[in-house]
Structures are given as C-alpha cells and as structure tokens.
Image (cartoon, rainbow, N blue to C red; front, side, top):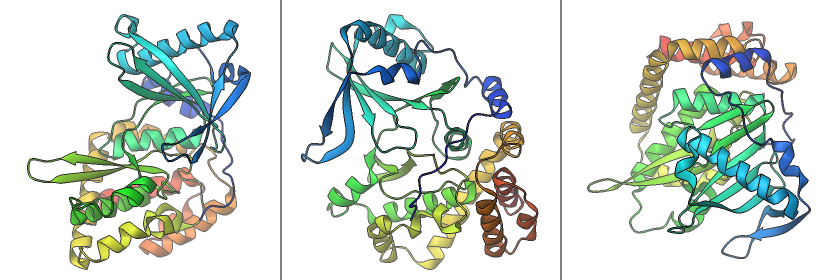
Length: 339
C-alpha cells in the first residue's frame, strides 16, 4: 500500500525532445494555470449520493466565455486534429476539479446539443512519470492513448470503462459474468504492469471494459492512473495481485484458473509485449534513451527495486542499474531475450 504522496517530476529536455519528435507536443489555446482562476466550487456526488472528492468549479462571466471556447478547441485538437468545424454542436457542460490527485486534474464534460451525448477529457499539470506511463501504455499494451503536452500542461482523452472498485461492488456477482475470462485478463494485466513497472494498480486506478463477443463477453482491464510509473522501490507495488482492493478478483481466479493455465496466460502476454516492442523498437529505444537520463525517483527507491528485481529474476544486470530508466530498460530487454 502507498501511504506517501508521490513527488512530481518536471519534463526534462530529453523527454521534451521525444515528445516533439513523436508529435505529442502541441500549442494549446489554454493552460492548466488558467483553469485555477475559478471563483467557487460545489461538491460533486455520485448516483448513490456519495461524495466523489471532485468539485464542480465556477468561473466569472468575464472568464467563462474565453475558457469554454478554448476548451472546445482543446477537444477538437484531441479528437479532430484541431478541426473546429465538427465541433459546432458541442458545449461545455461542466468543469470538475479533483481534490486528491497528485496532478490535481480538471475533468471537462462536453455535450453534443443535438442528441445529449457526452464525453470527457482531462487537463493536468504535466508530470514526467505520468507521461512515461502514458507513452509506455501506448506502445506496450493493447490500448492506444490520446494525449498532448504544451509546456507544463497535459491534456488526456477519457478512458472509458467501469471503474474497478465499482465493477467489484456491482458486477462481480452478475449471472452473466464470465469468471474465467475476467480472471485471465487480470493475470495478463498483472503481467503487463510488472514488466513495464507501472505501480499502484488498486481497483480505483483501473477500469474494466466489457466487450460483447459473438457468443460471450470478454474483458479488458485498462490503467487510468500512470503517476506511479517507475517510482516506488517495492517490487509488489508493481503487481496488482498484492493490493487488497483486488482480492475479490483474485479469489474468483483461484476457483477458475489452474496453475498451468496461469503460466500459459503469462507467457501469452509476454509474447504479445515482445511483439509490440519489436514493432516499436526505434520509438521504445528513444523513449528509453530519454528515461535513463531522467530522475524519476529517489536513489533509495532505485537501489531497493534493483535488489528486488535482481532477486526475483535471478538476473544480476539489475544491480548495475543507476536509475529507474535503466531498470525499466533491463526489464524490457529481459522480456525480449526470453520471448
């Protein structure tokens, strides 16, 4: 369990150059700091009447028109490469601020006036750890990530799915639940997180997609919080199986997945990740080149994790790593060598 708030890290020139090269850096019509000019806030409650720890912020009439128009332009950048002509029916419905997140994100709810369909996107303080996490998710997982950076401002697409804690509470006992498929996906998710060193995947930090197949339902678990990418020194922080909030899914798996099947699913996921690495080999190399020149954690955490990974894999090159970027590089290299 993580008890201390993570230290945010600035975007270095090495990471900035990578973002520019792969067109993740774009000029934005509004910055994170502009949204801090709100004049009031109202607590936001969910459908059960529980405080979400988000607040809906209010702006003066003088600021509102500029902010709302700029947010529509941001959404156009995310969804339509900046083409505002397809955005004329959209309106900003609500701006929420998270009071507990490391990056204190703003969540923008945008609505199509013609059919009341809505979507969300996020504006955050740019944290280097999170950006490395987003980029690794994009190249190493089955998921594509929509995000852009401008200076110290980060905008992200909304990741759709049922929050893990709500899925466990309301869907785990559904008669239609395919327990074997869900348990299989959790094993694969656990493997992805550990190999690419994404930490803190308790049930509030991922969502579960339910995907209808022609005769069944499949599941995909998607991380939504990347702040703990390559940061903590404890090995188990990178393994979702060790978070007590995930125990209901673990118990479900114990009754439906044999030890041999678990090994098979881990091998499958490693093979898929190795294939993606080969497909993105130049991009991953350049991302790695940036990360090994960056400070992403403390020396104490880096030494602790190096010792733990060396023992876990019985692989001494981890002990020669000087920082988190090098630990990640060795983890991925080991994946390639064994796949």
